[in-house]
Length: 311
Image (cartoon, rainbow, N blue to C red; front, side, top):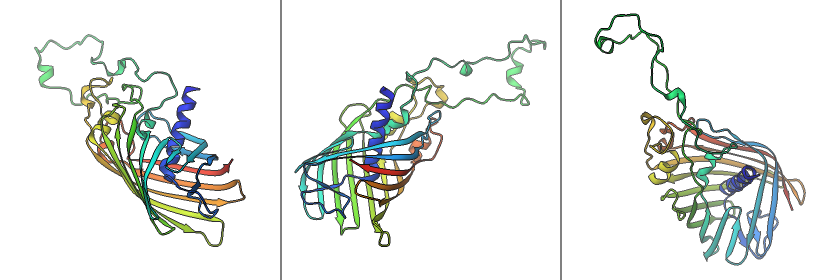
């Protein structure tokens, strides 16, 4: 049950990063699905099939079957999935809010089996063949003239089973939206760790463009952006040092990096409660992340297709 709860929190956090925070209004029109009525709970559930890939060695991809969305807005306070916020500046074309939310980086390190640290792997121990050599003692000449024809046993790269636990973190910061007409939106967010876990910060920025699709009750939204992460954040989650059960040759100290991303989302309204939903996103991980021996892929993908039911 504990693992399932963590996955629900992860999926909720993912939907926040995909859609962004919506605008609150006392009189929302049905055509504006970005708008949420003040004082009304919004609960919906996406049902279908999808996957969130895990770029780490030994990290399994996360299947997406049920994806919950939860939000509530009053005049200034709001809840959007795993984000709490207070809007202190609002105008016709922009708004600025203070937010508190779960940091999403730890999602790569959630595992179904209990425990995060596995005992010393015997495969990494030093030593040669157990047979007694038949050649005469050359007084160390073997070390001076090694047998280059002898195959070298490859070292095993570190996996999630080898490293120390990476904890959940809570971020606080500032979120701003700039609305360019009814079809374009720029979002910028600065957050820093207030839980004392990774002791760093990160910046997210995105541009979204919404297109009508013929005369259908549908919309197509395209997005592009980036996520800048400080050296402290990357080092805590992707760095390797003496606290991890890995060889010293694999020690890695993270540095700051920028991960750009591209995304697309398509929604088709079937009736008052049901929508068809397709969304996809690819994040191109920064070299500061992919240089870590713990990381296997240079990008992370999110894909989902199914139905969205609004309660």
